[in-house]
Length: 73
Image (cartoon, rainbow, N blue to C red; front, top):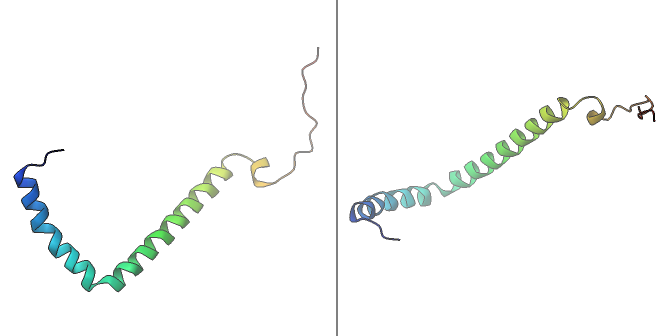
């Protein structure tokens, strides 16, 4: 892949301050990573609870005592 000179200059101009900021604030970066992983876990859990609730009573563990309806032959 070939990069244009403008792209290289933009990366060289932006990357060092970003790396320096991450280095100087690395303890907050670790905390932010932990918070984002925790938030993603709870978002996935909330989505799974909502999906299970939309599937009906049997998906939530309520037993079905009705006999199965087999077609009469």
